[in-house]
Length: 77
Image (cartoon, rainbow, N blue to C red; front, side, top):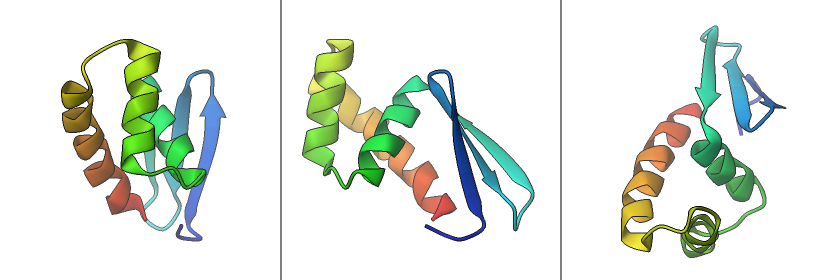
């Protein structure tokens, strides 16, 4: 994690501030779940399984969402 990245949980969302770029990002509930699990060093399969249980949807649908979220999060790292 870059030193210029600050994050704070607010309700079910996570707010991320990039002080170098002066940008504020808001993660929705699903993206916040992925963020938290990545910080706990969970792998893709563990995260998708957790999302499948949490939202009771098909894992293949969640894999697409997961991949999109990861692309956005990687820009912050």
